[in-house]
Image (cartoon, rainbow, N blue to C red):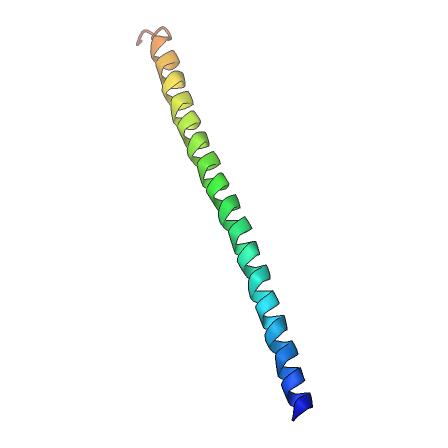
Length: 67
């Protein structure tokens, strides 16, 4: 019986350690996701800004006369 309790105690301790590892990993992944989402939003904004600037430059080009 003592052996079984020791075994169960070691398994529970290993499970608790694994839960702590997964919690830490989850926190790191959540932070990385947040950073990636911010970077993505900044890139989308820069892309839209660039599109508008290119469109404005195209509008400033002289128009070809129609034949």
